[in-house]
Length: 195
Image (cartoon, rainbow, N blue to C red):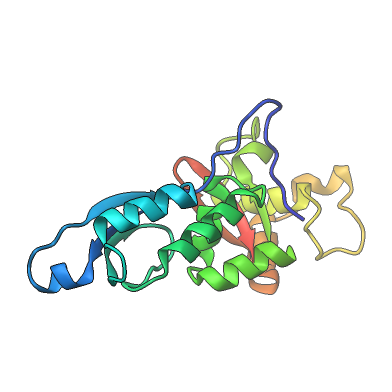
């Protein structure tokens, strides 16, 4: 289950990354000729830029990158571009994807979790909007998980008259250990993620 909780009319920002692409032969000769590219981009445009930088029948090297996951020096940039295009179709915005990669930087495992739907992500700030700001962070996490129906520690829902007596920080601790929930901060937003 994916908790997106986007407001009506809000657009989803897709994940983009930057790579610094260069011609391998020129780089090893000390005549570096690369430039920064932002992916994903149209595949025809990428091919044209690639040919300008690397040339036909030449090898490339990625000298630097700005991405929430690891990229090897010799990564196939066309496959990487396709992966990013597919990520833009998964329904998760850039911040949510970044949160998933912060929990697990292995790109293949995250992509598999997205494809199979074997992850949960909750925007803590949206769920807890309007709550008492003096609450402990872990207490808020426990309350959010309870509010969203992920509190599996009790066989019945917590009765309303008992809520004030529940140690939600302890509930969060138990759920983080038992179910793998992890808090992740992306920008000014906190997510609870499990994979």
